[in-house]
Image 1 (tube, one colour):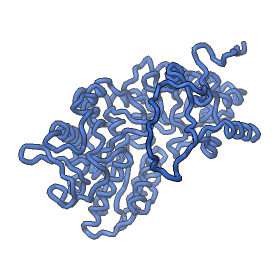
Image 2 (cartoon, rainbow, N blue to C red; image 1 turned 90 degrees about the horizontal axis):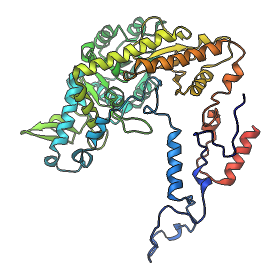
Image 3 (tube, helix red, strand yellow; image 1 turned 45 degrees about the vertical axis):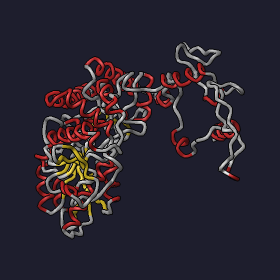
Image 4 (cartoon, one colour; image 1 turned 120 degrees about the horizontal axis):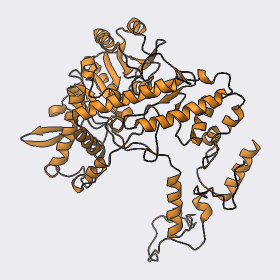
Length: 510
């Protein structure tokens, strides 16, 4: 039976939503503004007599517009979110309640230290937890996000080499690393060389050993790695790197798989950033906020950036200037103020409410969920690597071979099942990759519902002669499949009726 069409464009409770500019009614406004008083313009010839072009809507129309838009968003609050690697995880409402306490929400970075002792103590306490959980001696709290934390770690490494007049110029990065790793090293002036992975998805330690030498400044390794696997040779790697006079940087993006179960300081790590939004349940996405505190070994701790929270004379203070006091050897400042304070509040609320045992259980549940998903989906999908995984499961596209269905087609079909697609085509070392991270907060019932849908779509793809159907997916979403390449190459950034019609016509012709 064909799907019925409607005069309104609505489909049941799925309401069609025009652009807000298309709802413009001249003379309509949701607010009464007072008349502009007499004044002397200060823009001279730069003053404009043109209208701003804002649409006129009543208050109910504005509220309905944005409410309907919000209902078209997929979020962790509305359903299972299988996106891998940098997953949006559950953010307990307790965290939000604590962050909104007036004493935290209204604090200002320019206040005298004597008036913000509680806030400085919170930063210090959060730092204490991070050091305890990693087994490291120091932590820089100011980095604004994961990549910023990487930059902090590499700048500490460069400062340590500069302190002994070392001219080491190369950073080694595995080919399965996050893209920010080589970018960070290049930004610090290093030349990046790639270390290959073995067929089992882990670093080729023999290839790494053969490249170590007097020109190597550092090795950057993600552990668990981007393939969702634990680098079992980590201690051997650290020993070889240190013997060569280099430093060992560990990308902490996947720390949520091991927190409470091992301390990375025991692996010989010199620096690691921690994505608080991934491991310690603070909101992240849509541009922020983020936080990437960077833990440091004894060798790198002296070079940590300012500002630093220190305790002197019974009170908390901040060391704001490199070259003084505790910051004698600091490489300087990389961010204004003291880091993302609201994120620290949420992270500490999460850590203290969970406790060490709760954090350990959470990482175990994340790994358990991923392996349950890996095992069940292997009935139809092809795992990219043999054996169990850590926090995320990776599949290649071999199960789709000969069907005419691509990884993209398969993922778009999952939208019709009511699920956000997993990460596609990443890591790059896996052909047609599907990377799925269930996280620790999903129940078995939620996982089973997702798994049953994925298996059903896979069986349908293998049934044959359905490629055209998959290429048309999604068919039940508010919008059908978009031309993402054209949207990236020819974005329409400003709405104007004439230009919009011309663009639509041109794209239709092409």
